[in-house]
Amino acid sequence: MLNRYRKSYEKIAMGLLSFMPQEKDLKVLQETIRKYDSDANWELYLYKKDDDYIGLIGFEKQEQQWIVRHISVDPSHRREGLGKLMVQQLAELDVTIQIKPCEVTEPFIEKCLNAKEEADMHV
Image (cartoon, rainbow, N blue to C red; front, side, top):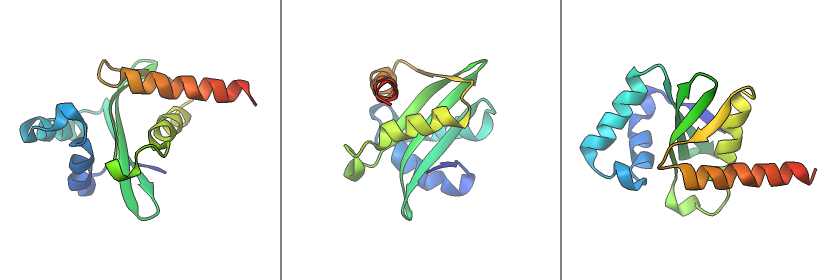
């Protein structure tokens, strides 16, 4: 289940973001968190399974689209379909909005969205 980021989740969010290659540097990581804290157009959601936060997805709002800037899953929970699930749940938050990737997230987001379209065709 996706939960909107709050300042009290900062350490958890930073830990999950640090799994992304471009967020390894502490200064970059702190700058990213500040962006989500201060810019109303940037939103971050953490994914909770059982009692643990094991993933996150962050996006930038632009008119009729949301640009996914960050997506990360704890390495011990990868290959369980959680990334795809987070993308699908994000799309369900507002069905009138188009979900788009940024350059960094494009390969993964395209894979997730194509999987959803294929599943919809088989229903």
